[in-house]
Length: 222
Ligand SMILES: [Zn+2]
Ligand SMILES: [Zn+2]
Image (cartoon, rainbow, N blue to C red; front, side, top):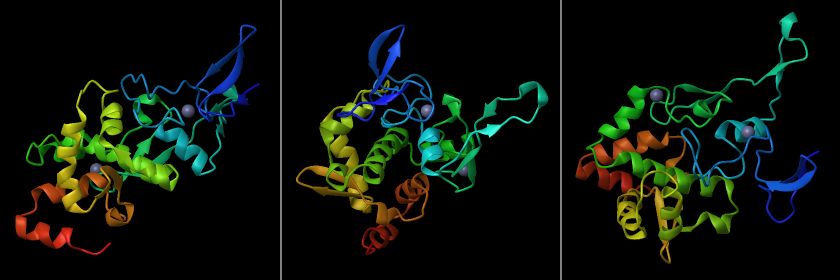
């Protein structure tokens, strides 16, 4: 039986071999949440579910599908979940397998397009904005503001190490674009500013626009 832990919703009490243990397993599928110690395919900022897939599974009220094949009676499979590609908005398939549970792009072509944007370390910039956007989307309002040190901690869970100074300097460009707000040295993603535009596309356009065009985008009221 799974019992929720009161102080930390990520931790559940389980009896393993007769011993009560607190583990942080996914409330949907029981898989261990590996945000703090990620392997390939894991998300460093999804701390409440094992993957984006499982978050959406619960959010959308989905159910596992019984396998109709007579040899597999009584077995279930995970339904397909589609999200819009971060670059081209095309439906992108997420599946329960961890390698595909946190996908963001429909294809390597779209992923490479982001990286190609003037080669200005867009990949890490994208992770940085994803962390901020995740906060702004799923955390209570007050907690959606993040300091540079906290952001650097999350990025440090990957193989990339970065200090808070570098985070602040990388964020300057996105503050200028209007995608990120800054107050008392804390940053918050501006969800309204992004609207329905896929994030990577907005980033790509911002970096490849001419100076004059940027002024127009940046001064747009949200
Ligand atoms: Zn899960
Ligand atoms: Zn795409």
